[in-house]
Image 1 (cartoon, rainbow, N blue to C red):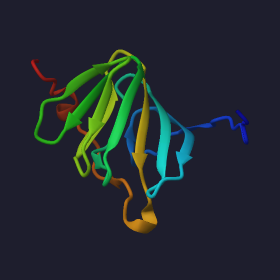
Image 2: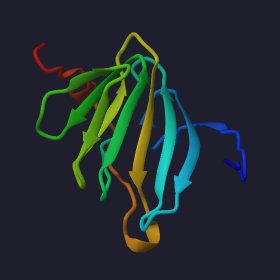
Image 3: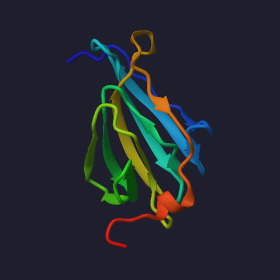
Image 4: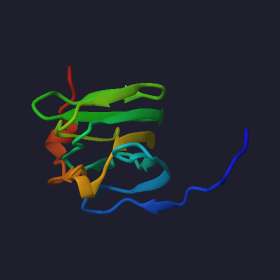
Length: 137
């Protein structure tokens, strides 16, 4: 096996219009598929979370560490733990972030091609009431 290129991911703070709280993003690579597929590692400080958003082609989240909170429009918030994988459907309005007491790290995999109209749609920040609306609580 020949390795053509080795790159080291660089961590950068998550944009404040996409996140509440402290987050760090590392772009790990992009697959050259019909709609380029991105692989991003995101680290969330306790209580940090994304804004409401959707992905035209859907998204897969794999929790690497900590406890994630996943909010889907019209549903109670659910938790996912290290080793869990969550599939977000195409166009599904959702958010995700860390539980209040733990750092959470996940891999996010999604197709995005702004030129083809396949960009993530970012919306408003998630309020504390929505963040705390746990299923079964």
